[in-house]
Image (cartoon, rainbow, N blue to C red; front, side):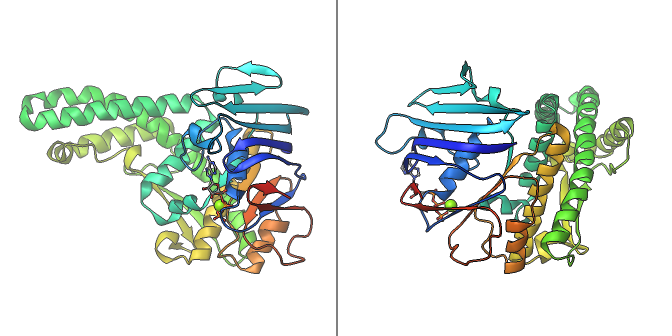
Length: 365
Ligand SMILES: Nc1ncnc2c1ncn2[C@@H]1O[C@H](COP(=O)(O)OP(=O)(O)OP(=O)(O)O)[C@@H](O)[C@H]1O
Ligand SMILES: [Mg+2]
């Protein structure tokens, strides 16, 4: 899919503005605090979710105004479509192809995009929480049913953890643990199974992109780290068995600690460059490139799944990347529409084919 038009009114620091992007690369450039990220955020909101900045909806409305409107024309599912979202002080209106909808979830699946924002660097730099959220949101996008499994798993986990705390004071309760363990292994194995499949597929594409970004110098690998030793290729029943065994083996530790030490909520995946963990050994530029490869791979998986190429939104990716890596992002990503923001873009010749938009004080020129 690709965006053919974007109109904004009172959205953040933008007044009444319009963007007519091209089908390939669109560079949005300008000084700090001019409105570049705001445009990327508006393009992202049509996916039907929340802002990648974690903002509340009333924060989208320009200071001193009563409402904000964002509207887009896009080509997807073989036809021209239109979506509009109006943010009022306490309510939101969504209109798709002229029909009023009850909420933004009706946008899901119609308009797809993948976003990279500087906060995504936490995927490499920080602890496992961000990586688990990344992979879980990806598998939920693959299949809405996965969100139900994850939420039931979390509920069961909370109940088991509460029981573990009770067992500390009432040891006789220990025999009731088995009921939770069966449900937990059954649900947990489904999550692990889907995550393993997803990581395998993601890894394949991410490796290709990373070879491209690094001019064939860096091998990127993703490796799922399971607390119950589940491995790629394991069947669902094998994983259920492994998780169930692991839960019963660690029952003494769990009772002592008052929480469940194994399961998908403790799993992680390693991002490895040339056989070394990127979190520990990669340079700033390598870390940024690795996250980018991951995001581009996410787009590729999504496009295989839906038959539609998502729009790629890249906020502030060019800094810290050398000219060759910048050249890859600007000129080598084919078949996708890309929006990319940066501060300086005076250098002639860097962008071979595409459109440039200068953003100045909330105006698009
Ligand atoms: N609701 C709002 N009303 C008016 N201005 C807002 C609102 N929300 C944010 N802004 C302002 O919009 C301006 C532009 O923000 P934005 O994040 O888009 O900048 P940017 O061009 O991406 O800058 P940088 O290069 O520093 O990332 C900021 O000064 C911000 O304070
Ligand atoms: Mg910005």
